[in-house]
Length: 479
Image 1: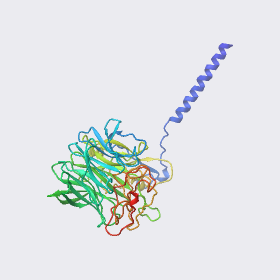
Image 2: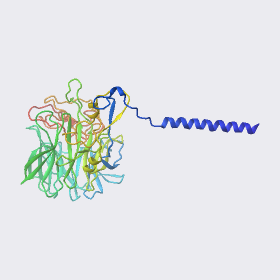
Image 3: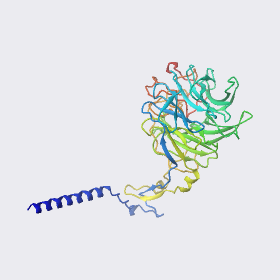
Image 4: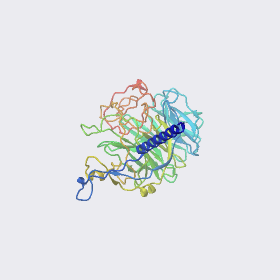
């Protein structure tokens, strides 16, 4: 009798286990794609309830996280010429930004500056001996240079105007930077000799210049915008011939609702990386809303003729402020870990990406009928048009804070430098800068305490230029 009971018990357990396993398998089985309904077949042999599917290769390889703060934000990365160290600005230990140094593959960080003011936008000299950076320790934004170990800082610019975003010439003798002209209400690009700061020269109108690393040509990449339409920033290059600006060329045009900002050169000077920032559109008016965008959207790369534009980070995260290292990796700020940290990736060759991309393939699905034309037109437009290589990321929600500039109805700034938001770089439509001399038009440099945001690094990279004329109220206390 006991033997019979044991056999019955084992049989029940085995049968129950089989049923449980079959149930799990049924849950885990992928659902078959339903055939499109015959009633939606059109004269071209297409089904109206089909959707587009893309099969494509990633645009990068080797994505990795390089800084690991959970408090504050790490921004403005720049890798040393030998590729071993990365310098960046961070608010991980204080409410104001300081300059930090770490090994590319390491975890520990070294604090190079410890000032109550903001120190941001570090840039290595070509020989790796010095670091230029932007600071407001003198009361307004100026350019400073220190040794690579943080010693002997000295002030390069000392005027009353705001001077930001330094970039070294290939020989390390000069710096280009942005100067805000309060009289004209525009950003200007200047060049200064590091050893003789009194020797400086105006080059062109524009913002966020970066010097081409190739010694065969004197060329700058920069942000500039038309003085009509949306006035959003585009990416341009300009050659210096006998220290005069020549051949101003638009590389990546802006679209109606998307700016291209924060250019960065490839090591050989043949390509540019940049950030796109998409503005929110008011559903009632169809116009770009006067809101601040607290994050950049995606990192792109392009050849100088614009033929190889590729979106690298179309994955729904906020990525901005790219910097190209000597080994070909691109370092940038991203919130994909939950807080703003430094990440890096290796972009694939644009021609390889385009060769392995397939056109959209129609896949049947059950549901409401969709016009065939809508299914075929599955991709949004890339900034500046041109050949699409990757699908655009889904638009990120813009921050709800309204822009404060009423004088020119301009939006607040966004871009490479870290905005004072809890996370993310720049605000996207500059509302009038709450720092700076009277007459500063169309900018928002939010500072800690002014908006209650946690990340104190000021917003310095506008995507919307301040046109000349008009003025707005400024509040010096917000510095």
